[in-house]
Amino acid sequence: MGKRFDSLVFPNGTNKAFTLSYDDGVVQDRRLVKLFEEYGAKGTFNLNYGVLGYKNSNGPFDISKIEKEEVKDLYRNQEVGGHGLYHSDLSNLGEPYSMYEIIDDKAGLEKLVERPLKMFAYPFGFYNDKVVEQLRIAGYKGARTVKSTYAFDLPEKPLILDPTCHHKDERLMELARDFCEKPSLKPQLFYVWGHAYEFDGDNNWNVIEELLKYMSGIKDRVWFATNGEILSYLEAYGMLEYSVDGSYIFNPSCEDVYIMTSFNTIECLKSGETTKIKDTPL
Ligand SMILES: [Zn+2]
Image (cartoon, rainbow, N blue to C red):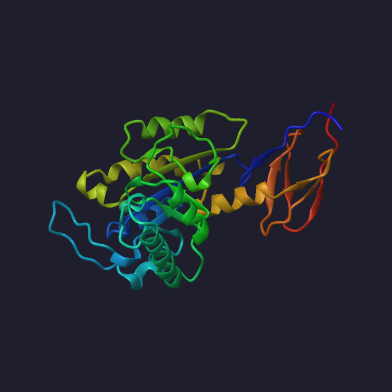
């Protein structure tokens, strides 16, 4: 036994993860998803089940929603999350109504994608303790706010998940470069969010393309994953059971977990198995 320094690494052996999150299920998601796929990026698209298929192109730009029928296929390589049935401010409704917005949205979307939803995004970014608790009861694992952290810390409370920044933030590319170029002992998450209709409204599709291009250039050093994939992985890491001297680690979860050991080697802790870690130097 000696000094140990084990730390989490992501499934591709790096300690940095990149994820995106886009709200409202607007028709511009079709173009955005194509861009994500072109650059291998992964994101979570948070939809309002009650307004899918709603047409509204009367304003300065189109904010029509995609059709129910296209949800499963459009986001097949991405993640679908909830965003409230009708996009109401959940923090200012009676509890029965906010629960209805959360549950009916989740139930409807789950029928479309044929799996349980993990992620939610707070409509307008508004929430309170009761809404957080309702999301937990509904089975959500994480929920994104709109508060920029300008940092890369892993979420401590996934049901109040503050993103790194919005795509329109003037510091976007500076943060991307910091994230990629500055080494870190701790695992990090770069989390960008927005609405795809904003690219039409601001005529700035180049902003997201520049970011995705830059990130795809360093793909070997970053894990591209959906919000839900990252939360599942962190949950599996949190479930690890250690012997007192740390040399035996049992992974009771359903996914393999990777750690960097004191020897700078990566150990794969296989799902359902106990792994013996090499003795550490004094
Ligand atoms: Zn929204």
